[in-house]
Length: 390
Ligand SMILES: CC(C)(COP(=O)(O)OP(=O)(O)OC[C@H]1O[C@@H](n2cnc3c(N)ncnc32)[C@H](O)[C@@H]1OP(=O)(O)O)[C@@H](O)C(=O)NCCC(=O)NCCS
Image (cartoon, rainbow, N blue to C red):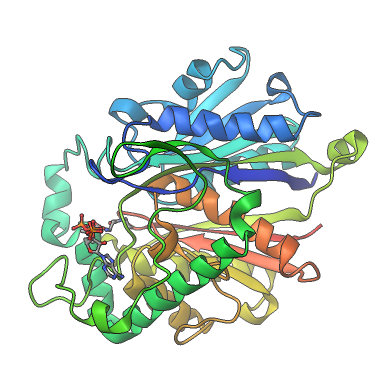
């Protein structure tokens, strides 16, 4: 089997998906995505858009502005018509799925160079837009238990995750994201692009909008439950509605060597797993276990983890169930903060956490060997991906 390496990865900053306050409130998701491509091609002059075998783009809600966004963004961005594109969806893991499709194609010899991306604008294409549930689905499940927030409450109840532990997780997520931002850690991955301040003034967006350096446990304790009156999940312990795009260039290893390109991580494999959609947040447990079992590895073999924080409840339940960590602050998980602080533009996140873990491994843990990124997805689809130091 051939080897697949990450040549480079980049992303936009994540903006709030808010009609009045969102920094990208008038930008289109296709524009944000192609600005990320532009940034990647500009800093990798040895790779031309026409050299790309195909572009895989993950997006959760493929409707309206995001309908076949893989193809339409590529064409709108002025990129060559001859390059094939494939928009794919797997809800939140969509962007990770895109990377896996590209990596597998490289490994089995269908092509040498791929672009894999993830994108979502949760303001202009809101969650569940144009959704039409099958009547038979409603016979199989209590439909009131399917929306994401309700699944987060159910996971908190079944896995006994206390509200204060979720708030503590949010606290550390923001603190780490704030520290990483101030230390310039995201500079390498964020492609600056124009946005709007609250008052409508244009400015260059190069940091994530939701991060709160001044987050307080006391204030979070006063917040109302977001999804049910007697619930434990609040806006602080839910990933915020956000807008963003991320992309990676993947290449067959010997081709990268021939071109004299540097790389840090090599693709080791991915695993998808399905679970009960009413507790979809627990899905990464099954995906990670499957991946580790296939590789003949244990949790302790993995140096660095990115476990997407869709909700504090599900993320903590997964970390505990897998025996990775009990409570924040974590040693080797979401090292530069997670989605509770950085945001979670659904289809983007699976790709974003790979972009980030690539940079974490390169800059903070240059000698670490293995890393895994994983995330849950709406309706019970989870995904996990492993890389090793190349
Ligand atoms: C929880 C949720 C419903 C809240 O949405 P919302 O009511 O629009 O609220 P916001 O996110 O704008 O936050 C509400 C307020 O609480 C504040 N807030 C949020 N977290 C806070 C914190 N840690 N400390 C203090 N204030 C906080 C916000 O700043 C906001 O006030 P502002 O507009 O004045 O800034 C929404 O974020 C959500 O649905 N998240 C989950 C998304 C999802 O399902 N993703 C898929 C996962 S699988």
